[in-house]
Image 1 (cartoon, rainbow, N blue to C red):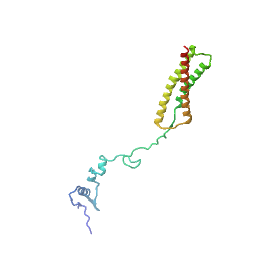
Image 2 (cartoon, rainbow, N blue to C red):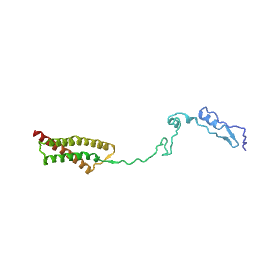
Image 3 (tube, one colour):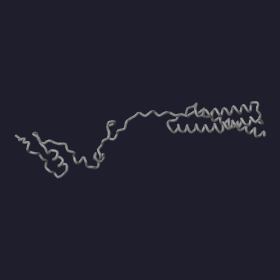
Image 4 (cartoon, helix red, strand yellow):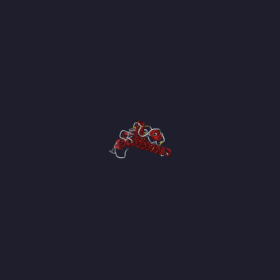
Length: 192
């Protein structure tokens, strides 16, 4: 029968390497059942050898792994809003369209009304119609182009038929207003 003497201490044979020393230090106390292991950090875990966890995380891996379970992934998954589909900003075309139609109506009044090309009002109204449609109206179409290009660059862009038709109607109204008022100005200059 084996004698369980608590005064005897168990020791590992010294192999000369650090792993053996760590093990012998771990089992330096005994109880009645035999040697008792005390937790000791392995010296191999602190070396920065390639492929070791200490080399990858020299200060220790303290990242939260609760989201996906992968070290370093602490990103939250927030739902992003669905991208919106953009189209032409036709509200910016309306001032140009109105100015083009106003120029056409003014020129029609001058040509089919009581005025002649020698009247002072003929010159004044035809010049105003040209300025309104040619300068202001075309400049406002430039504001439309800036906003339209911004919308095309920001998100998905959709061409809608009635918006495209309104654009071409605005271009036609401005062109008609500029040309008709220029012809009226030319008639006034020709009657001098």
